[in-house]
Amino acid sequence: MSTSAIATVLAWHDAINSNDMDTLLALSADDIVLPTDDDDPDQGLAELREWATSAGVTLEMGRMFEHNGIVVVEDTSTWASDPDNPIEQAIALRVIDDQVVTVVPHANLEDAFAATGLGEADLYEE
Image 1 (spheres, rainbow, N blue to C red):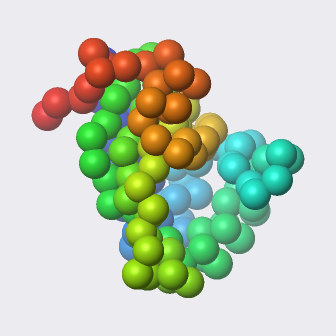
Image 2: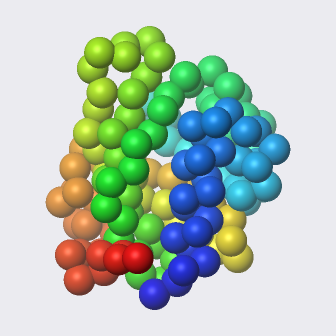
């Protein structure tokens, strides 16, 4: 189990929630791949900065699962544009050398497990 990957994901979420762009960018690879509403993902720190400064999202973390640098987090996302309708989802993050390189949201934990190969046995427990 990679405590480093878990620590990176925890700090990455904290940086988003506190709008700490310096930390968020430092914890992200230069060529980070981010999801979009279409089939063409965004890539790079400029795209991450733009999303993070305009998204107005708060991420409440639930359980985390980790194996070989892939971390799946149960998240409740609350968007400033619709604060009364939080979204339950699972987010898969790939961490290499203490930096997030890929972020992929999934509708639920089962979808994230199917996409990453992780499962309940990979539950991170403090």
